[in-house]
Structure formats: structure tokens, C-alpha cells
Image: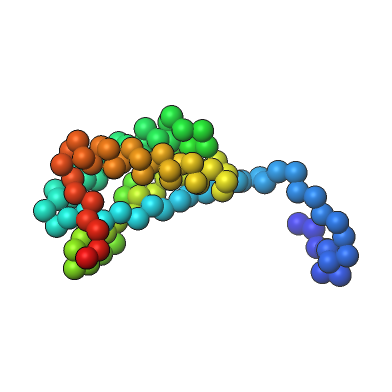
Length: 117
């Protein structure tokens, strides 16, 4: 451990060349209709999330994505999909690709993404 006074840090030019641990998790919120089979929703969602991490630049390929149900609203059962990315700048592409693919897959599976009324 090195102790550096604040005065020294404040008056210095610091260049960061790399982060020792840049991976981070992202959470994508989704809401499905009350008629949904939640086990099926979880299975399909995790499959699509895993595909995205494997196939999209910036995804952490060995991470097992998961979902966590978080609440009920008047129109939907809400949950978050948790994915892992290599660096924070990868989140937009991963989120973009996931939303496109999950929307198409939910249509195939008859899973209704519920919108607030």
C-alpha cells in the first residue's frame, strides 16, 4: 500500500493506461404480462442473454446471465436481466443487441412484453 498526500495528487498529472478490473454488470429491466409462465420467461431470457454475451463484442463469454423478479405493477411482472460486459463502454451495444433479440424471441414464444397503461 502506498500513501500519497492529497496535495500531491491534486497537483499531479495522472495518466491511467488500464484498469486492473474493468468488467462490470449491467441490468436491463423488462416487464411481462401476468399471463406469462415465469419459469419459461426465465429460461428463454437467460438463453437469449447467453447468446448475446457469446456473439457480441464486449460480452463476457463465460458469465452466466440471470434474472431477478423485482415486483408487480398494475400491468406487469417486472424483472431485471443481469449481463456482464468487458468495459463500461460496451453496455450500449450489448443492451441494443439484447433488446432486439429478446423482442423477436418473445414474439416467437408468445411472451407478451407488457407496457404501462
